[in-house]
Structures are given as C-alpha cells and as structure tokens.
Amino acid sequence: MHLVRRLLEGLCALLLAGIVLVPLAQVILRQVFTSPMVGAEEFTRFLLVCLVFMAYPLVVDNGENIVMAELRESLPTWLRGPVKVVILLCTIAASAFIAYATVITMQANLGNTTPTLKIPFWLFLGSTLLGFSAACLLHIVHGTKPPAADVGPNQ
Image (tube, rainbow, N blue to C red):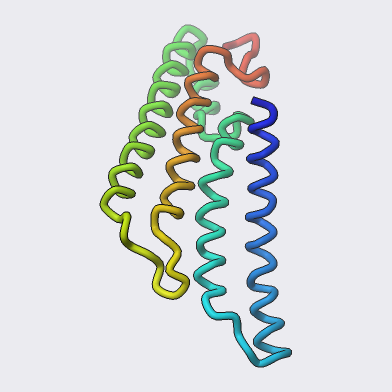
C-alpha cells in the first residue's frame, strides 16, 4: 500500500509539473519564437482533469475529504457513531456510483477523441474511474480500520 501511495504521489507531482510547464512553454514559444504550440490548452486541460481525479484517493487516504466532522461533533455522543456509519456508507455508495457511471460513459465514448490532439476520451475517464474506484476501496478500508487521526476519545 505504501508503494502504491508513493507511485500515486509521484504521478500527481508529474501531472502538476505538466500543468505548470506546458503553459510556460506555450508562452515562451509564442512570445520568443512566434510559433505557438498547437493543442497546449487542450493538453493542459487534460493534465488538470487527470490530476484532480488521480489525487482524490490521496485526499481520502489522508482523511481530508468531506466527512462532516463539525456536524458529528455537534451531535450528542450517543448519536455520533451511527451518523459516522451513515456518512461512511454514503461515501462508499457515492464513490462506487461515480466509478460505475464512468464505466458506462467510457463504453459510450470509446471512439471519441479531443478535437485538436485526438486524445481518446477514455483516457480522461480512465483517471476518473481509477480515482473513484481507489477512493471507494479506501473508504471501505477506513470503515474497517479508521485512520489514526479519526480515532479519538469521543468517537
């Protein structure tokens, strides 16, 4: 699990570097060499989409996703546990549903590509599928063994 996390962090760092370097290269090529890079905007958008969805499992693993902690803490102690279970089940269901909907969308768009660079849509959607599938699994894991930060005297 640790190796997968490190690989995912490295991939996200590369995607972030691309988001910075592609527009920078576009500006330099356009201003200095008067020769813009065709498809730079499209490629940057692709990198951003991939970064957002590939980073989501890291957010879940760190316990930084929306868990409604303020709502739970405002409830009586006896009600916090059941609400936590409901929230957990909702996050699992939502992640699983989005992953499933992504598979259906991928199947419907297998032949579609982006207009300029002809990047297949399944690549965009693949990052969504991987991100939400991994998030769903992490929610399940956290349901059986909560992260250390989530376990406290009032939990």
